[in-house]
Length: 267
Image (cartoon, rainbow, N blue to C red; front, side, top):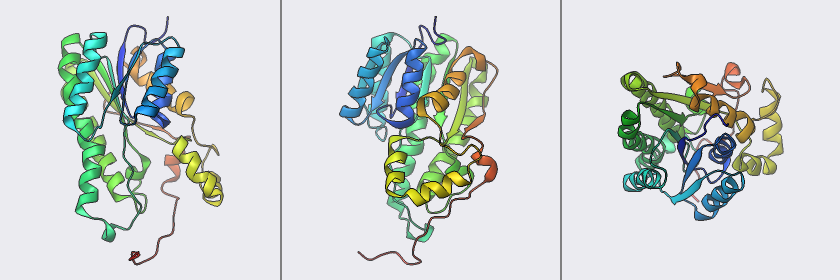
């Protein structure tokens, strides 16, 4: 029997990357999974892959920047499977790199809506169900970008650090109900990472040269394995933590220094 047999998980942004890796790892351990993904093509692909692994899977088209769509995904999980045991907040919508002085209010508002409020809304939506059941697991994907204040990614950094604060606060308030909340800061060779680095091999060599293990993590085996621990009974006494699943790169601090011009291009 799998470690998540009989449990139901909602994973946002599970169409690709880390979300997809976690979904596949959970499926191999017996969980039913709601793939809450904005892209129908990738969302259906993941659901199909989970079906092939013998898991019960449901794709629900979800824009996590819209509270109503998050609420609908939670209702779909309850309607289909009758309960929610695990919530994984993974979805993110990319923002362009730029200096702090270039950033606009609109960029930060969008990042906070997708990167922070989506977590807040989904946590609020699942909490009554988890409380009624006597417990549950919430796993929020955060980032070393925020922890180490990486250059030129202010909207992402701010949203992810806000999520860590949300995670810790909910962990303290909800522990009495058995609802455990933890964060993962990953470093993974996602599809997006592979695409970017294939076009910038020198950048990848520089990054990996300072990485203690010399490689990025596998979304399913490395990041998915850590998420499995936090979702399983093995973590029954773990809440309010940030787990750095990065091969030790957080120990080195921020050692990535991309180049940008001093002035923003007018083009």
